[in-house]
Image (cartoon, rainbow, N blue to C red; front, side, top):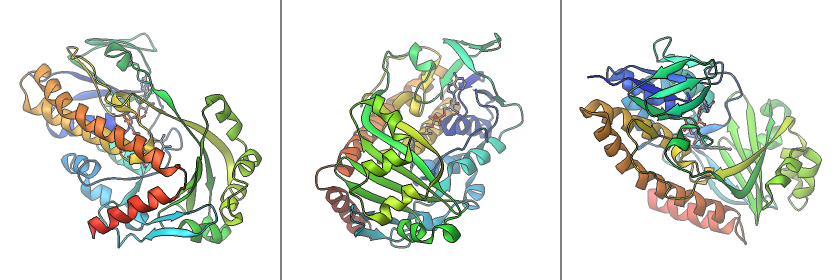
Length: 369
Ligand SMILES: Cc1cc2nc3c(=O)[nH]c(=O)nc-3n(C[C@H](O)[C@H](O)[C@H](O)COP(=O)(O)OP(=O)(O)OC[C@H]3O[C@@H](n4cnc5c(N)ncnc54)[C@H](O)[C@@H]3O)c2cc1C
């Protein structure tokens, strides 16, 4: 019998799950509180790894659509110190071309567009979850054999499985943007290059990414133990003070940015988070293992979790054995990535930065070429 599957959350994980299930003939419904896939600025570029994000797209039958929107040159990486001296540089060609960049918005559009209409219930907020049923903000109740929590870091579904709550990592981002950079900010465009740029010092740094449409996104990262101080970072003048010891060319990324400064405190679930099997409910992606972005794995893992869960449901006769198989492989994978992201965060902002990251990337490059 084909199980009925209710997916809470239509982010990259939830949409990938619905799509891979669809390709295997298993229907599902996705309940997403946002009104549409373009409801807000979808943020940032992602590099999709061969063994995870790209594998998910292959299983989803969406590689041609993906290839049409990737930017190969987005793989380029530059690491600078606070004086603006380039300490490591790699072009997309040198990095091997295996990790092309894609804008998150494009990816969500491709996934959402690949589903039959009506599968995603946009504007449907889930307010309560119990095994076998969901309650929506409208008061409607949905019954399902399987409820999947793909509802992100602050997952409501997770509360049915585990008491764990994400903790503040001690690092906060203030997100800013520069637009029309080739014409209006050529110096910034040259500084950042075609891909990503990390300008690092102990306890802080500027992490910039070239995104589609002539834009640059900058995360001004600051280690601050007090999450309440994060709100104070949402101010250009304050940021310029925090980065007063950075070279003028680097501070120009802040000074020349336009629009709102968005504070983003970084949270993570405990490394190794897991739960005892509860019939008919599971989690994937950030709901299961939100981590700091320093392993570059979050979106990749969400898509891989979704793919493996879909394939397990297609391969097993009963839901419980599918969930066991999925969780048995997912828990250790997530634990390893969470450890790598916590170590990556430490390495980025360690005393002597950017030395640790330069050393790590130099070793990685030597190993891969
Ligand atoms: C600043 C930053 C930079 C990052 N950079 C990278 C990167 O370079 N590479 C990478 O791989 N990852 C990166 N990540 C991580 C990546 O964004 C996440 O891991 C990924 O989006 C997780 O996908 P998801 O589908 O599990 O959750 P989400 O994308 O969070 O989706 C969850 C969805 O559930 C919906 N939802 C929540 N609650 C409800 C409810 N009650 N009812 C209905 N719907 C609900 C939400 O609206 C949302 O659409 C970054 C994260 C941050 C914060």
